[in-house]
Image 1 (cartoon, rainbow, N blue to C red):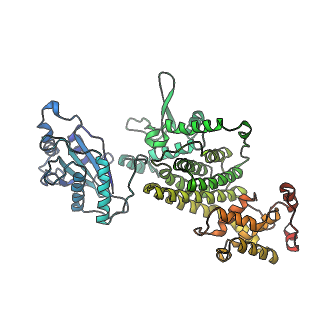
Image 2: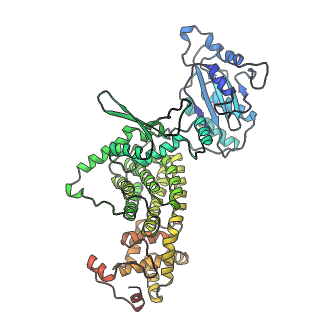
Image 3: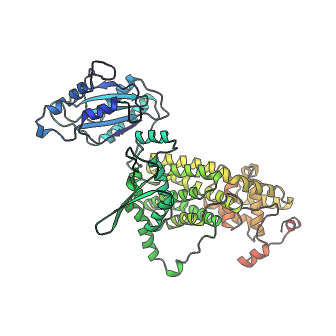
Length: 573
């Protein structure tokens, strides 16, 4: 149940006309009172003799009784209370009780013999009511409605439990502004999946992902097709920006612009600048020879870098300070936005949904200490600059690798928010993880299928050797892994690693020691991508023979002695 306390107004009759009217888009049905301050207020919706003027005059009477100079300029208090989509349809009696509890909790009409304001609750839809009150008590005093929004939220949490309704996680004031009912109805009429506000928020977040300057940020917004207005001071300094969809227009056929801060708190220009200034400050402290960085050679290279950055971020979130962890979580959102923007068609929908859900998890009251998250922001930049993935071959396999590592990062985010008591953020991160899991299944099916077939065709002695390595490195989970369908893909990976000059048992021990595996849905899948990343193996092999580096090449590159090949392995060389 979601209460929304609106800004105080000055015209009671205007608000009543809207509540009892057809709505801006004919969305209001059967407007009528469900409760009022005296239980006897005239109801223009059900009583043909009652008028809006009658109800307005009754509500405004305490205000009009004051001398004109003592009347508050903004005397109309208004809140809406909406049930969630999962809730049952409540009766008028239930909505009436809810209205009485809300006005009592917020101080509008506290009850228990204390003086209160006049109010009325109007229902014009199945899923919500509106409460209108005038902010002068019967004795001419002002009500104690300080922080009425917070008080309404707390009362709704109690109402949900008592009525068996969906329990909404308590908010902390860091969420992006919800679309209004008018925006939702407009989106429905236009056939949009999301409102204009939500589409703009998603587009702006993708534009800022990995961007390093204002010029680049605004170029990306323009390239995405948005209309842009910049707010410039007389000195010429840029103060802010607004964006609009070209086809989202008002009644005067003008574009509807939204300031960045109205899309999300962290999308205001000053908050976006924090990312750039922190990186610039940190970069100045880095030795010049350490600043040289090879640009990504393509989507697959960018995805490998993303997997590595995500894996390092997991350890920071689990063990680092709160402000640094918050920065990495915020930058994880940038990586998800960038990956969704550059993903292939078959994974794009789930990745976009993951990024859309994670947006809420990227902010909390713990202020991010920017600069330490540079590796993740660079990963987001690499993804954007490397261009769209083909979704097959090495590109598709490294996408699965990156998603696998990001899943662990988002799971770590769930645990971090839960420990801090950030209920809404933890829920949002869980939703993002579910979409990532679905995207992984789509991305990994083909490359793991190829590895599975290769594993099935390994020679008996080679397969036995990899089985021994597994049991040596992972004795507690070895039997589980051997029973998984992905075991053969892991066996092929271990064989590739051995052919490249690595010790399979040592690689496994290192991979297992970096993080527990007991909660993984498929231990073998996780190990495949960890090993192929850490051993620098191709993520995808195009045939049964595979493309693993020859042992001699690996030995010359690493300085190790090439392992002796058995007859079965000579067939694979």
